[in-house]
Length: 167
Image (cartoon, rainbow, N blue to C red; front, side, top):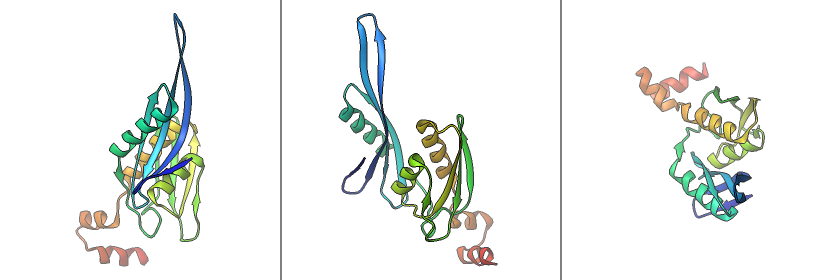
């Protein structure tokens, strides 16, 4: 399910029904995992819990907007390959040539669409639990380094670094 506002794309990853057993019976609540992105390199995720589904989604969207991260995108793909792990989930992200598309499962595809990456190859290794997969993917995206950052760190200009990469 995709919900849009003026500037953000909101994608619901998972809605879970959670039951707490008490002395008086069962207490039913809902949790929602939501991705929010602007399609231009900013993306965030949030987990909301409430007695009703719409309230849980609203809370998750508010948390996601507060936890936005900036992702470097070069020509519609990521700058370099990266592998990260969270819990039992491991995610591998590889840059791809233009026209490849987003090769990913449902959870990672939603994140890539929200951030605005159009060409990437991904592989989920281990657990495909949506919560751990989202956290592993966000860890990987936050560790990506742009070409301008690498050039500055090496003491070179952006054009020198691009020239080296072509050779």
